[in-house]
Length: 139
Image (cartoon, rainbow, N blue to C red; front, side, top):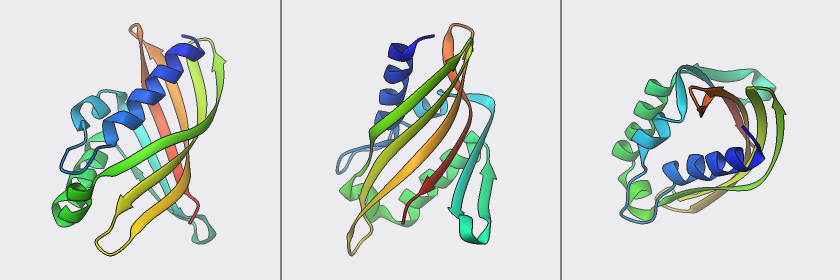
């Protein structure tokens, strides 16, 4: 494992969940980036201590549900793009702090938010897998 491999992994991570108008995300490939036991933590309001802990199967289900319940998002596209990252490698493990810009249309406005993914990666069976990820969006 090295920074080049991790950078390529991050490019795939964001590419799999992003899509243009009328397209769909590549959720099967996205799911494949995670260990089966991976933990996903979303901090929705740290001032109130609100967070949700999930697994990859339920997270993908929720992603699909948003597109089903709000088809305008799917019809207009959804984009998450990395804007910066830091990588720390320790043997077969790595920690990545990845800042991203998210853009989508909610039916009345184009929304842009900046967030941070805190990702723990494991080198397992000659491939990188996400062991855990936590994220928070800055308003």
